[in-house]
Image 1 (cartoon, rainbow, N blue to C red):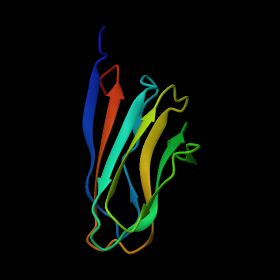
Image 2 (image 1 turned 180 degrees about the vertical axis):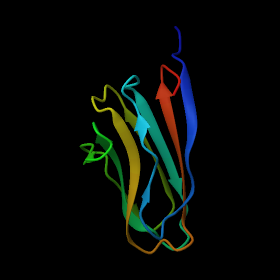
Image 3 (image 1 turned 135 degrees about the vertical axis):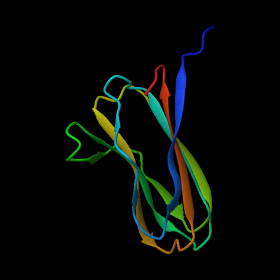
Length: 116
């Protein structure tokens, strides 16, 4: 059995969860299979939502169905495994509701089967 090539990129390093955080836009038009992983600290009790967003023009963004994960005031982590996406662009977004002073986010972006 062969394992497809993967490429992992540091995507967000020490993102400040006291406010909104939007990761860099990634062009996935040639790579419809990818994943995001995120981990965050409990400092400051961050409360908010993580979402995966897609766009075809890098201007109008839509949230991927069932991609919303809540940060409920403590530390946490999550892996979003996305296959066969039809959009050209993708990004990870955190929308803060409250707290989060001193809380940090680290996220990675992995292309499955190719090089970014």
